[in-house]
Image (cartoon, rainbow, N blue to C red; front, top):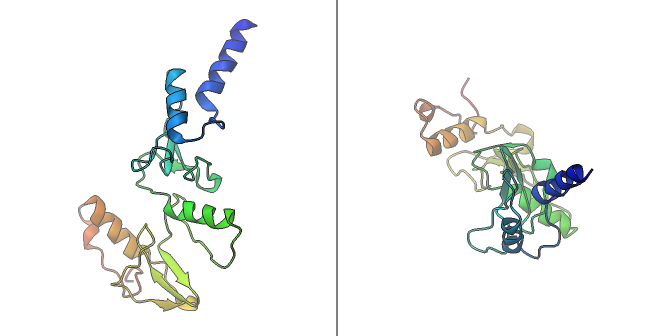
Length: 177
């Protein structure tokens, strides 16, 4: 019986997020004092150690979190190594937390912005951080492209994958048929 209680205690230390920590650094320090192999150690923001880094991983399972460490459950199945900053997911969370209305977020499953973003009746291609790709034309909401080619081309350029950078996209960011 004592053996089972010991493992239950270890499981709590390793896998349950600390809810009493006032900051990421405090949680990190606390977990380091009681660390067990395979236990979770939060990643703190490089610019402010009181805040949590946007993406946290437990083994190979990664997920987006708010700056206060709240797990953003809609963005909780991100493959390890995915270059996500969870910017869209975080902005969506902050917007809803403030109970504001009027903005529709179109986040990708990894917490970044989806390739197409719309304001009012106009849609356009965006980078993963939500910034507009100026080289592609915007379209009316009824004629919006998925901007899949534009995103694939930018991702290839960033990762320097050979062959992918030669993609030819239509003026609206879609693949040329």
